[in-house]
Length: 118
Image 1 (spheres, helix red, strand yellow):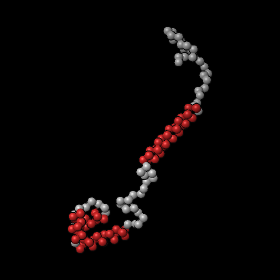
Image 2 (cartoon, rainbow, N blue to C red):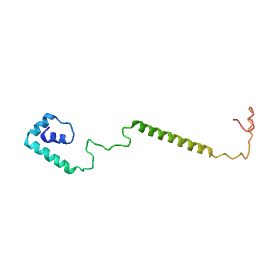
Image 3 (tube, helix red, strand yellow):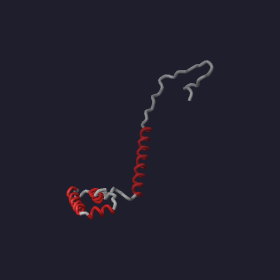
Image 4 (cartoon, rainbow, N blue to C red):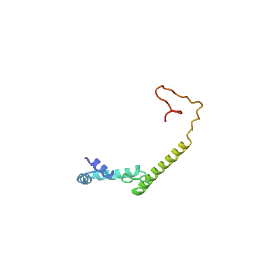
């Protein structure tokens, strides 16, 4: 890595070789580059945006028990809603109309009971 890459890696929180960094900062150009890059970084980075090592805290982060409970409640409510909807569909099913004619079938070798086989 050259001086610019080592100093840039330091400012970007990336991996770098400490020996290469000390060599880069031993040079006057390396120290000036560090100051220039730090100032440039401060100018272009908004103040209210989290840095690369920070991230916004998620809702219920770190509370695995709460996350599990919420997921279980969602599954339970979904199953309950499905059961209620299924009962409504079964209760409101269409009843077939009564037959208007009964046909008696005669096979000759077997008698069919009146109303057919069940």
